[in-house]
Length: 197
Image 1 (cartoon, rainbow, N blue to C red):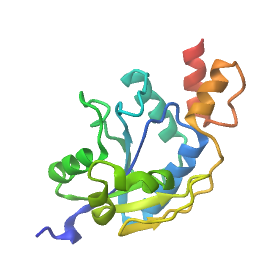
Image 2 (cartoon, rainbow, N blue to C red):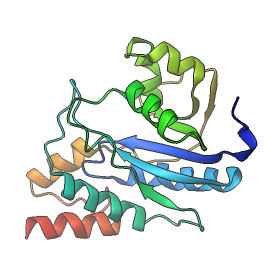
Image 3 (cartoon, one colour):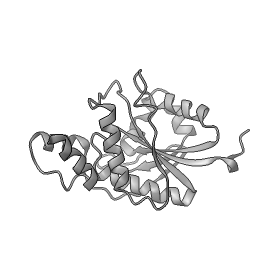
């Protein structure tokens, strides 16, 4: 049996981040503040293509935008790293497979996974979802329109005050040539403006 006292705590915050929004920034900031209390680091995990979502942005572009997001968060001495496992995976992404891969590859780490209330609502139907609900340390973010009706066995709610926006909304505004300054962080805005030029 592993000695839990010798494991490094790591918070994993995954998503498409296409592009990262002010909501992503607020969640990442909350993860950093939680990491302080756990003596943890934070991994950002850009997702690969899924059966229900094709990202449609190059790997390098996504990494650049995520680096910009991380740069606009007050790190408070907490290490924020980008974990490229899913974005480099050839086959489609299943969260359960990534969980098992990380548990095997990093036995010296104890992972806490960040999920939105919308994900928790459907997780029992995911591949390996029941197992994850019963076994993962989780931080749950309340998403507008999806009240938290159930928590995983080892889940706690992470309070985050976010603006009600989405990457889809940002992409639509960009396509319609509308301002997005209030929807993304300054470095992400700079990154997106550079792409348009």
